[in-house]
Length: 114
Image (cartoon, rainbow, N blue to C red):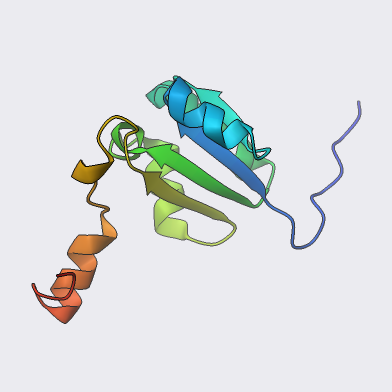
């Protein structure tokens, strides 16, 4: 049995899960993409990253970022080597309101982002 080598210090994967149109743009810059991913794909990818102890920046299209799931919730609450963030939907970027906006407004007041 061959074990994979541990990731090099300071290295991390860039992983993108979302619609095919969104993912294809990230593929051009060398990201690992999962086009037309669903919640089960998100969970499988996150579980694999966690179990391999890998560092990663994981970009999820909005509908996937709000889907919940054991690994998504766990990794978000842990913080650390796997950072998960949200991307606006390709067809409606103007409707994007990241979750961090609510935190910023709660701390700094309702006019903080205006």
